[in-house]
Length: 422
Ligand code: GLY
Ligand code: MN
Ligand code: MN
Image (cartoon, rainbow, N blue to C red):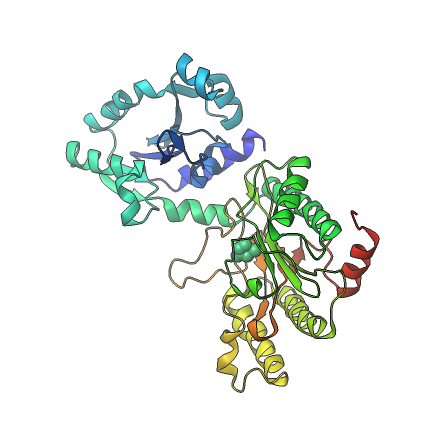
């Protein structure tokens, strides 16, 4: 994505800052896994949204004085040892190119910068992204800075800018939508590779691996979340993650997966028959979920919330069908077979930010992207079906961004018959 996007994000954010204030955001730090190994670094997404930069340790500072906004980026000091063992580091030229920030400094000058900011009575407010839970606060750099500033400069007041950044992130710009479309199209390729290789006798983890292979081949370097590849009854565990069961004949296999592209997620679920052909019972349940998926997409429009679609469209429909099948007697029992909700926002995070802080609901607003993902999980039949698409809310409804990923019974059976790998 080009730097203008990040410059625009910062400009919009800075407009919300009061005069005589400073905002400081952190990329985050490496987290130790065991002994001398760290977890793979995961950038703070609010920091990424403001800078486009993905490297541990880096700090963004925005100051506003007499309504003049200045931006500074502090990058890791050049270290020969670091480069010898870990490889590339951000340079000032590249940092400037990615973020559009002119003033790029080294972290060795950061402490002095902070002292200069707050010693003279130039600023009265510090904005920090205090999004972490209390338990996390001991290692979170924003909390650490807050404690330090509180101790040394007690006249500074703090404001949490988490919600402001989240509400900006909720509405996607054209460039972000393009990244998400690309992530979805890569996921489509991954699901097609799965369909080609799926057969009784293979293990769930082989399908997981086929997906990884396909998305890397298409230019995605990472997944939005750990793949769920769940055969038969395994699919009735919502967050099944073992992916280690041999796939049996005449079973359905639920896949919930998504590639990322340039940090932006996709989140798709499809359910396929192991041997390429649905049984009558599987088809019946599959088509109920498919109908719910279509009804959800048809009702996703400005003015509605995810909760309304769930409570007013999906739950009554599932209750009606489950009663017809004799699985439940009362509407209130529906959650026994449909325990999750139908939708969440998606973006830099798979379960993206932007929930209404008052109600917890996610309003469908033009430019926001959500999943629609009804599912039925019936352990008695060893069947779990989820069909999940990613939609963009528009003025008069929504666009299904994943409409090209097949989901009709006939299309899946035809594809699997015609594209057998071996
Ligand atoms: N993949 C997680 C979800 O569908 O919400
Ligand atoms: Mn989802
Ligand atoms: Mn999903």
